[in-house]
Image (cartoon, rainbow, N blue to C red; front, side, top):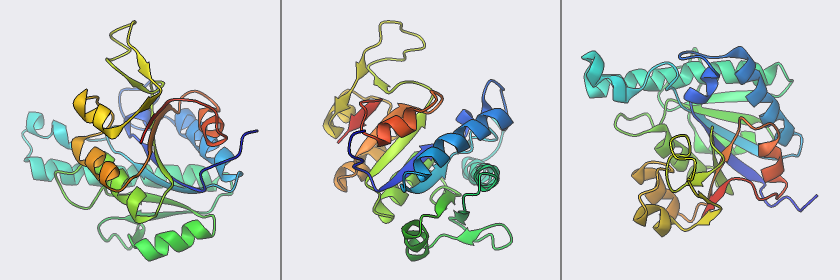
Length: 237
């Protein structure tokens, strides 16, 4: 096994990933599979922070189509991330892993309010922390929240878990000849207008020298292999 180079990570998990083959909601089998992947790297003494999206329940971008104000839609999306965070915490605690949820806006009956100091202490003690509610502000995506939290907790790397094998020059689901990039600079991502994360999150990571990895979490063992040093997915640095 190669030497493990990451002590603390921020894992960005999309809400859509939790749907499995469904068109809406949370698929129990997929949720359990992701919990298994996270548990496997937890056993390697990796300190794990997680930001989870809410697109499987509601996306703020859908608000206009539904006749809902953009700001209200984004607030609904933030609540959706909290639902997913509770489900993920439940799945992890069933595997005897102590897991805490911190929300960007106060919800004392549901979870802790976000605190950088508290989060770092929990991570120091190998507790998993799930950050819900995005940044707490509308008009910012959960990608931006992931970049922000990765910086705040001093994560060694931000890992974006997707349903494709990394960053391509075009959509691999539409173009069978799409080229997979193994390593890129942030300027490459900006110049090529690659849809890795939104512009705000890319700039945040670039300005704070925060490495980003993109890999397929649906492929069993990918996360563990990446943590152990295998060349899986794509790296932006």
